[in-house]
Length: 508
Image (cartoon, rainbow, N blue to C red; front, side, top):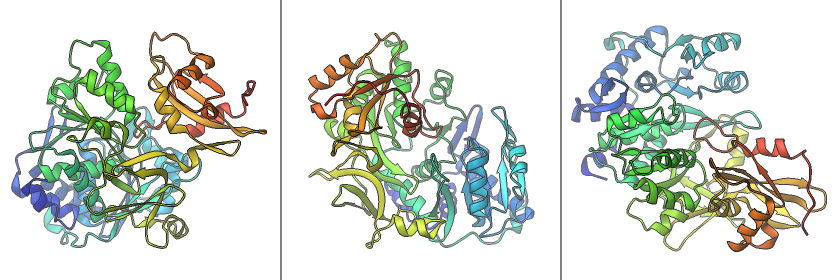
């Protein structure tokens, strides 16, 4: 971390970081979107005016304000305006509907709710009215405005809970995750340090700003003084114009984003997809080693992958200067201040400043932390002698066949090496005799020859997979079901779809 970034990392609150960066480089850009450019000084000044408008509406320090907004400059301004006031923010992903949005509003007891109006064909204002939300206002193109002279002093403590983020809630109600300014500053500082970026870089935000990655990434911009392009709706090839126009050097998001960039490059192998791109970086989903090698060979840039979660936005991150072996097969190393402990059962446990304060529900908090204050992640893994973290799967993603534990991730990583596999998810399906049987669900790339189960198992045998781990069922789908944040595969939907289906003849 350079000297300026190191000095700024001592900021106690997010707003203090905004003020200190704006004083250093007021005219440098921080956010780019279409023809619009927001400078660091503009971020400070416009966020203060928005804070004054919110204050006139009745927002005070500690007021809970929910917002369900897309990735736009206005969204960042509103969020920092709330940080200036010391309000409690509850970001809600913009594709949540009645169930998740209603739960988040009720559980957080939000007194105000900012929405985009009609966005991508859906009327968010009408949804808010149906849910009986309080203090509904639209904040897509315009924001509350006022005279900053009316504002109280900015918050001075970075350890108060001022953020409520929501887990995905795929099979139950989402959990409200409690963060402080300091936990978000810690996560963003660690990310900035790990990626070795400079003020000459141009980043990109192609994920929902309401995701925990929003402040994580913005803290990095504030520390290092470089801009990022905001992509309101990521899709290729449409988004490529923005990447090329602004000379993006750092892109990414998650494994699905890497795969989309690779697919775009393969359509015209002789022409660089994004000529200025030098680094892909992300996390949020497992990364098969084959993806790393493909990015290096075909996109001609470095790939660093990390490990984070809503509860801990930055746990480990690959170092661009690390060895290809470590970058391909591990999640990187933890930063200073992040303690990783592997339990007797192989679960990854975490303790450090970037770890959340718990959940809105005290019972969930009690269940999530052990007696030493370590957070139970539900992920399985181990540490190499060099301190790199290797994830082997989720506790809930271990398939138990005849009493033997089978890692879905191990099989998925091998399947990604098959030329007829574009993406793969391995799940366990109920079996009355074996407990569970292994089912591989795959997407095929365009033009690939059709796959069948014997061909897949022969490939996996040749790759060295133990016989008892071989899939007993193969399903080929047009597209794996994914969430809309980091495009993570939703395995519960695959279990629902195929769990009650036909059961082919078994293999003993």
